[in-house]
Length: 252
Image (cartoon, rainbow, N blue to C red; front, side, top):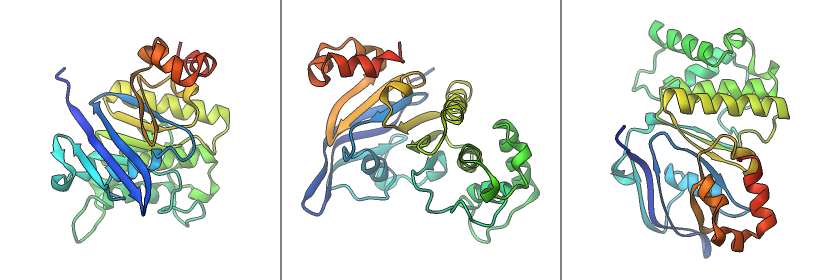
């Protein structure tokens, strides 16, 4: 398989007013990667993702998506994004799972935005793929946190994205739901080749699923394979042997 870089940042800077949120961040994510994006509170993880997606402006550097500069990129259907706070879908929103998922297709349509039989078939196929066909006619407000998260994943998946970006997807999930959700994401990554970038505070847990770690603290601290991180004396010096061991424990 030919390696293709699908997200690349070069010397990226982001400011909130006079405050520097990201400083000189450079990395390249290849097709098929599963990247755990980690760092302490206030490190700029969500800022980085929002800047890549064009939701926040950068103050310096470059961003390329699928080999094109962000300014010239318009194939946003290739990217599925699940933000931490689902502002577009309130949990009490009076809609069925089917209606929520079909929104993922509406956003890709020109005017007039009409739902046709092929769209409904695509929704059915996506719900089936995720094992949640039984939730199709249930109201979103009736579902557990884990079920809601899978419906929102289906909404992101229905347009056949090539990359999925998650912002702390397991925050509200119990351990069993969290494991089920992460296994589902890993399956999409391995079987369908969907590239995954997942923001997490739980660096050791994501190591069970991700093949690469992107660790930032306003600037880039580490980007590469988990196995290389665990063997790195430089990272040992930065984090301390105990912290490095905790991050690597479940990965190994």
